Image (cartoon, rainbow, N blue to C red; front, side):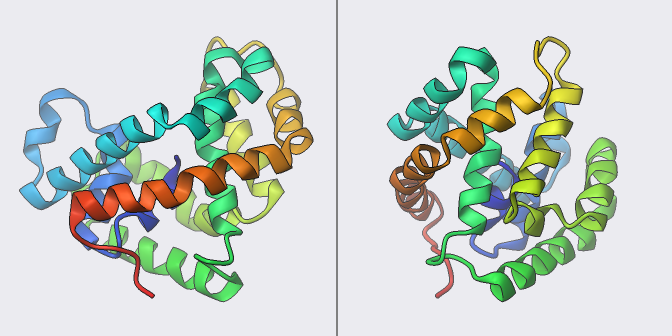
Length: 198
């Protein structure tokens, strides 16, 4: 899953949110340069990624992408999950998603000096282009796909190919999300002892 889901599944804990958001940018021994509360968020991010990858619904979604996208299907599924979360009426509406995005940006900004330098740049674009809210729209998914294709050295297709898979299989991929996400919430409740705020 991508930034929105990792933020949501931090359950409003600022240190865990920060750790979850920066986890992919913390390599090797850099992990030990962070306070324990942020290291906990990094560990939770990695545990959640492993859980997500092994979930049957994620495997089903990857198989939808696999014929054209190969092993990159998992990356596209991460983005797709954020889109369906942003449109999940049990989790967000337009106003609550906008408020959640701003709250998350505020949490990260408060620890800006502790962020990995590369993530500082990513965060600048994330906030200025409001990625967390943008996942609500198909155009936001397209922009995320474009960024992923641009960074992937060996992805053999233009962005129209994975985006076409997403739009052509919209209902099937939404069913994968519906099967997966309640399990992810339960997993993180167990890991953290917390849950989403009502």
